[in-house]
Length: 405
Image (cartoon, rainbow, N blue to C red):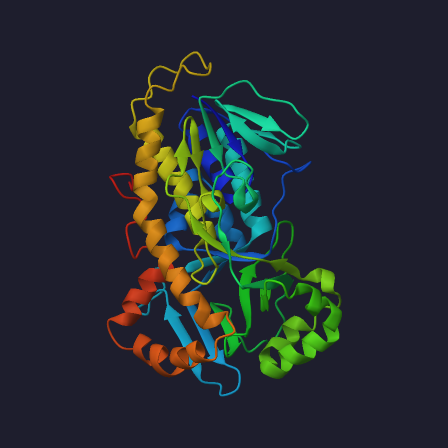
């Protein structure tokens, strides 16, 4: 088939690599003059790493990223632990891969190009009609057999209308300071009630560099960025260091507000992430807070499910490469893609909705329940094993319906 992909982000490039490797003609359209990553660090969970291996980017990402074996958080005032989740307490067979978006983008972009995908920058997609993409400059493509909407939370194609969450965060990238007491094999976080959350994620190295980096973040109300800017970086650094002295050598590297980027979050899921000659993946299909560290994971799994569904369907003869020549089995394949991801996405969405207010909200009650009740319970068997599977991404089968191989 001839397939168009809107968006050269994580899901779009992963889908491009997988679909091109399967023999389809793939063209990726991106709005930027040169495709580039947006944001700081993230964690690829083990099931997402399996997708990276499948599309040929596993080795490159592991060379740049950093293995994370544990997530540990404490309360600022008391120092009491309130979050302690291991990937695998018995060893390090399973671990998250913390990585900067630029390093992940480089590996995915290289894999997509190596597989034969064509990248077309400078094309801002404004809609889709009968398999043709519409662009901001008024131009229109010829019809494709399939369009994949991987254009993220601001998609002009997806009908998803997500609910904005009350809290977001500012993110930045700094050098990992020599002599830091924080271990480099874990995500470390500090909380004051639920209205302050700050964290450090060791993310390996950037493309072309050798210095180890960390992604740092600070929770903010979704409408609080202007107030943070007005307060000044110095005042913010003082507050952060007062809450968590170990944070000081990280945050002291931030001399200007422009080093920190505001991220806002939303929650919502499409009931039907497909249409006529259209598949919707990643943030264009479902959005949630990053509390469970599943955002990039979900995009990779969507791409894998779509490629597997198309590969298992009777797509007819596509030898001519013209639109419509390979569309015989597209609709059944898209239904199978949606079914394969339905329950994994929905369960993680519900759990994200339930966990987020405990760590990012104005509630005074939920943090007390989190610290005095939920955390002690989380350390009693079999809960630790369940939480390990939750963060690894395999609490439920990521790809159902026989598409997981």
